[in-house]
Image 1 (cartoon, helix red, strand yellow):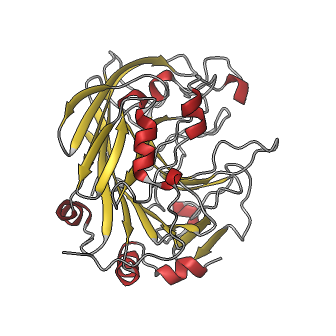
Image 2 (cartoon, rainbow, N blue to C red):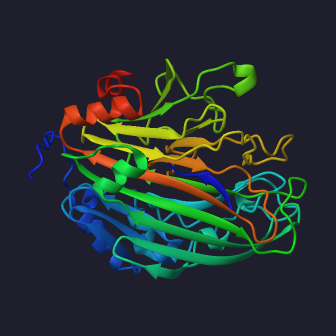
Length: 398
């Protein structure tokens, strides 16, 4: 196995701007989802998450404060309520969903052999979109999902593999033990997801015929008050690559993307489409965001494996180097040229290295998602420890 990722009354003060309308409340969204699809809720006191087996066991949303608390995941209410299957992708939303790379290039699993790299030819595989995953086991704190896949990449390589995904709701003690963050005195929700692909075919996966990667995407609710923060490893750009790649959808303006010290700051307001990425030698395995209006501090944490530099490239073109992809990404949604928009939402994303697996071998990608709210001074102390910057620095960077 190859491991790709893994490491009384509160005095909470609520700002006046706390959003309380029903669409942003956890209990409302759980009941909304129940109308259209079977859900599994994992709950521990005021912390809870909603899982949907029919949508690959994704975490749709979570709360740190019970049914009346803020609902952290972005949910596409319109698409879900319409109940119509879309032609290229069904963007149901969800704050943590499984994806596999590469999306584009000669080893893509989103474009059939001979297709053009254009939207009309792009197709999300059903096993990442509409196929339900099997519930293998379930407890009060975790659920294990599984699914067997047979597919073919753009180059015609046949791929047979199994996906297994386990999501575990963490207690405060488990958060401290597994992630090293003391959340006592704060409202919190945290979960760990262990995402595994197993080569079930007869052939070894090699670079010449294409490799897959585990790619996790988290969709959250944007706001003018949300800023994404990503620490990066300093060093020679010629050896480590640029601190940030913002060429996905065109260069991002300085009022939306800023580098200060060893930190990248990115606006997450859902008003301008843009994406950034960090190459593996720059990535520290830590990403965060702070919603200053709602006093919400979010972390996405995973270990970046030492010495692994080959990550799949998902660019929509035949590539000179198909293993030059990024390890961490963040996306801010915004209107397309025709004025339409899927969201708005913003994303935090992690990827595993390319999976060179012999028959029977597996790759695991483990990550931790945490949402914290409450006493500002306590949140600030944690932000300084985990991200290396204060909440005031995040609030005032733009």
